Image (cartoon, rainbow over all chains, first blue to last red; front, side, top):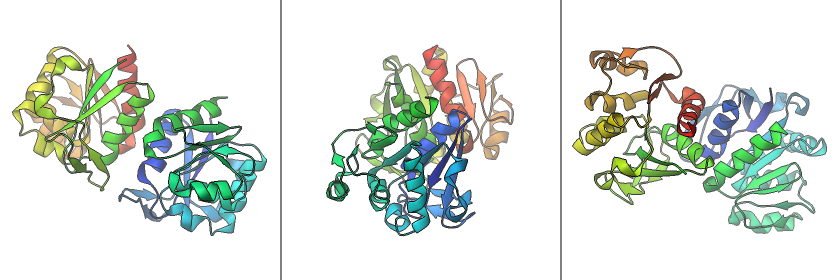
Length: 169
Length: 169
């Protein structure tokens, strides 16, 4: 039994949150979707609604086995929250899997966990990723230790499978 | 290598099409999404776009190993197309897996493939399902031979897994 923390906020990329969420649930694992407010409904970039199970402010790394960060424009808002960044740093320090896709790299940049690491993202933030010290490569899936990254929703099958495989150990 | 045919039209339930689609692609299988027009972008009930790979009129059962029918209100339109119904009947006659969820049962009703079969759907069309001769039960997943059915997006993890398992054989 694994527990995975996922971040949500408005304009999250619908499938980048919901595909891995359901895929992890297929493994009979628990996914806790945390947003700025518990119980609030957030709208995806394309309109799909997602109710936050929990408030980010109340989350602790110790309760979870991995962190999932979907893209869209939610990361632009979430990276301003010091609690989002401290949680991300804790998962990183404890070498728990962090799976981030598309624009989610912005949160990893602001948490400053990419120096010397190989990663990918949407090409839109490639320069931000490199300026933050990442070795950026254009591949559907990049796994560097506990850091799992992909580019866009087209990569979701390999992205989610990599997180499942990492958690299976 | 398996090939799966999926139907799309406007107001399809976004995740009911896209979760199983990506899940099947995770198995390295090919999913062909067919709509009324090849290349047209259809919008999900919640707004997620999906481009049709192919036109329903050009599809033949012989090319595929299974049929996936998502819900939403797309089935209300698709059931009016005789080609949708003849394809559905062919998959049924050849006992190829047909996975249908939520309002997708409407297509199975109009194809008249539910008599004496156990199945589920959204509670909204329960009466239609029973009037078409189905033994309707309220469960997340119902598998009766090659017919796989579920109720709502909340059931997607077990629904998609059942189709994967059936195709793995």
